[in-house]
Image 1 (cartoon, one colour):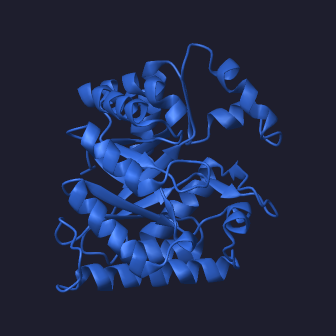
Image 2: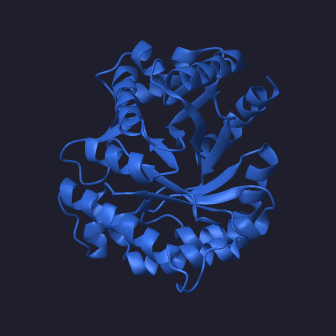
Image 3: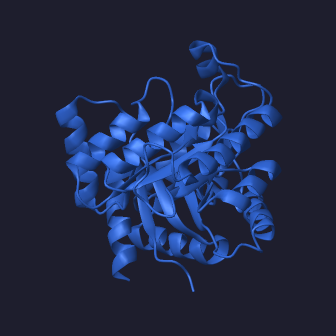
Length: 296
């Protein structure tokens, strides 16, 4: 039996207090289940932004999507997580990843490390958070029991293994880092490649007592009668793909409302994605898709 859909929006643009609150209230009005923030320099600081989002709203949960573990000391992060969970009334979901933008580490004066070192640090962070926040004498204490839900964004073999072992939510980006890029440039993976990654995760997770929720980050949403025209500007960024191939990407939703809702349902059946996250620029465009999926 499939899980019901959940929908999140990743708010990336910093704003003064009233504008930020209005943006969060609008996400709630549109029906989003989770208000999320990323962890990049030049974007809002995650934890104060989430506390403000929770104060401005009543229903949505709030979460990081995702924290760059390389920016964080586990003991200090445990304090932030517990405090934020308490101040948001137990509405926090913690998303973690390895980080992928070398230039941000250079700006912050922090080591970037090799892919293996970044995964090792994330593993250490996850294990320390579990130890610290699970200790009865840790102060402050998170509100949620048995703990704050953990999302891990993963793609590689070692990351999928870590996700299968620890995460309540397994998040797939449908993209990979461009080799040699220091600025975090990403390129999409094909539907077939994503299928292989999800299948590999499922093999690793087959002994779990409770299956994880599967998340997909949607990169573009266009409700339109002309699908090819909608994705045409994107072709300059992926010259190796035709418009037909772009329209086949799971991270691209383009077409009529009926076409998009059919695509989302098909992806739930094929991959198991029931939790979808959209980027802030597509918050309004995705709203009718959410309504249609819930009304069906």
